[in-house]
Amino acid sequence: MQNFVYVIGSRTTREVALIDPAWDIESLLSHVDNQNLKPIAALVTHYHPDHVGGDLMGHQIEGLAELCGQCDIKAYVHKLEAAGLKKVTGLSDTDIAKVDNGERLKLGEIEIEFLHTPGHTPGSQCFRCHDTLVSGDTLFIQGCGRVDLPGSDPEQMYDSLQKLATLPDHTLLLPGHNYGHVSKATLGETKSTNVHLRISDPKIWRQMMGIG
Image 1 (cartoon, one colour):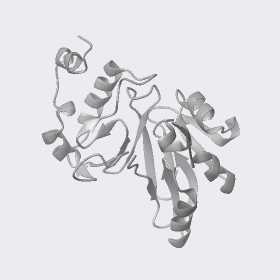
Image 2 (image 1 turned 135 degrees about the vertical axis):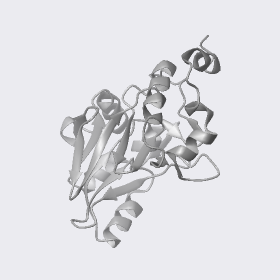
Image 3 (image 1 turned 45 degrees about the vertical axis):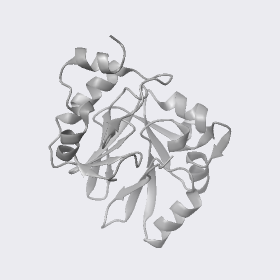
Image 4 (image 1 turned 90 degrees about the vertical axis):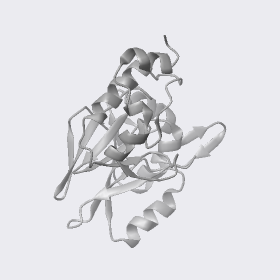
């Protein structure tokens, strides 16, 4: 699936958050431990199993269930995504911290802002820290997340992409999958090549998405 898992946190306190931890939790925790980092939170862009663990087309993927079983941390998920996350991973309410758009999580001297970007799923969210945006499956360098899955909405995706397009061009974009010839780019660079960010007419967007 070519998923990315990100580690973001404080250089001074060594506190970190793990973004969309899945697939190989033991190796992830070993990497964090070798860097003398302390995971204190898991951040969830959306509830699909390739990002959080669970059953994926008959294959059992490691993820949040295994992580929370080994570490005393909570999974921060948008409030509209919490029910889906529980169903997919088996996490309990005590494992989950529900967040909303604009809320922030502080790790040492840095703050992570939660940006609600529905479209791929109802509670999809991105994470902004300084001049970096972790965009999950909302925005890729060469595209955007699928809008033909249960719970997806092409109209909401359009609004979310318009929202992200207003961020400064120097913002570093870190997507949820390695779906292009490069794994990271600035938002300005992405705007120049990604047609999904260059459509300013909702009518044209609907036509491109096949919804008339």
